[in-house]
Image 1 (cartoon, helix red, strand yellow):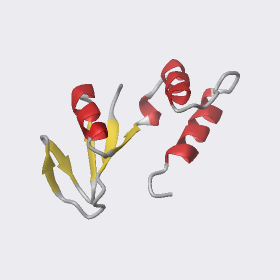
Image 2: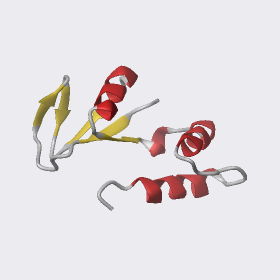
Image 3: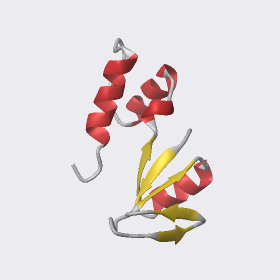
Length: 88
């Protein structure tokens, strides 16, 4: 996984958790070990879709139960963006 945003349950949280700086409930990391820890502890993890290549986007879509086969990168990106908005 490339860079990912980590969303705290507390949207107003400003501070450091597990070495990650959170501002208004959002932190950023590239450490897959840390991202797994946050996910296991109830945080919402959102990969930086902008930085993913087509193969990574299709694999991520598949992991979310979405079928991106035959879609252009832009279409896939949009689909993932729509389904991933936290607090939507």
